[in-house]
Image 1 (cartoon, helix red, strand yellow):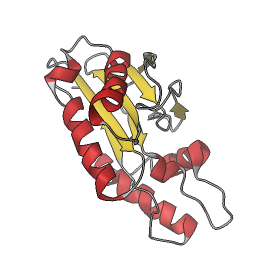
Image 2 (cartoon, one colour; image 1 turned 90 degrees about the vertical axis):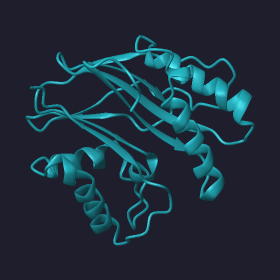
Image 3 (cartoon, helix red, strand yellow; image 1 turned 45 degrees about the vertical axis):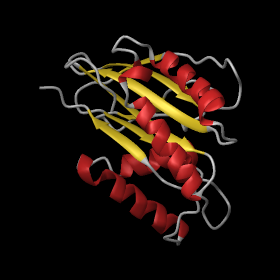
Image 4 (cartoon, helix red, strand yellow; image 1 turned 120 degrees about the vertical axis):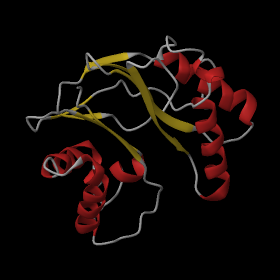
Length: 201
């Protein structure tokens, strides 16, 4: 989470290309950048600008052939208003209280590929009981024995199936369902996720 005013929370999901220790070290470095006031430059910095700065950091400072995908979302806790930027990461999902699953975002270029890349701020709104779900492509690109990826359609199906599951247990339930679908407990790619369970007081 990024620092900000008391009535806002900013969350991000980050994934670095490649595998192993080099990718993990770069991911940790980028996460530290994202968690710093230096990159966020205050609570009013649009998510699109944070993504653009991350793109610049990877190209100019990190000095690596790795790139990163990112979703960064700023949520106003009282109103449920969301502004997010997407940089090549899987589309964020809003699981509505009534069971509907909506995917939002505009795709965007991964950070660290194109100098001067720009990103869009995408608005959305959460209602009480809705969940914002961010996952890495290690989950959405998970293949079944027939070679078919889970993708957004499969993720939506799993989220609807797990709608009754408490927020603290949701990712365990998703992984259990993916294992059952694929018949394999090993993931070829890293899997990470962020869940915001919107329950304003």
